Length: 205
Image (cartoon, rainbow, N blue to C red; front, side, top):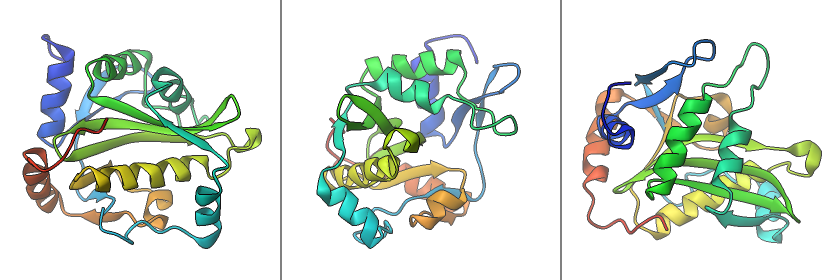
C-alpha cells in the first residue's frame, strides 16, 4: 500500500470500485476489482430465503447484534478454510479494518447462541453502499444458518436505511444460491457512483 492515511486510501479505493486483499503467503495487501461483479439486489424478495431458513430467522434462535464484537468477527473470518483455501485477511489487513471500524466505516453483524459467537459478517459502509467483505458460521457449535441469519438482518437493515447497493465482490455458489447476481463491471461502476453519492441513505448505525 502507498504511504498516507491507510483509512483514507482504502476508502478511496472502495469509491473507485476496488477492494483490498492480502496475499496468503506474503501478506502483501493489494487492491482488486473484478468483471463481472457480484451484488445482492436490495429489492424486496431478491434475497432467497427458504421456508426452513425463514423459520430459523423468525424463531429468535440467534441473538443478532451489531458492532459488539467486531474484532472477534474479523478473526473468525480470517481463519483458513483449508490448505487450498487460505484466507486473504492477513493480520495487517485485519488491523486496517479495525481502524476503519474505529472511525465508523466498518461494521459487523453477529449471531450469538447464549454467550457464544456462532456466526457473523462484516463490511464497509460508504454513502448508500455496503461493501460486504466476509462471513463465517460455526455449525459444530450450534451455528448452522447463523451467517445466513446475519445476511438477512443486514439486507433488512440496508433496506430500512435507504441503501442502494450491497456489493459482494467475487461471485461464489453460496451467495448466488441466496439471490446474488453478477453484473458487468461497467454497470456496477454506474450503480456505485449513484449509490456512493446518495443523499437518501441514513447511517448504518
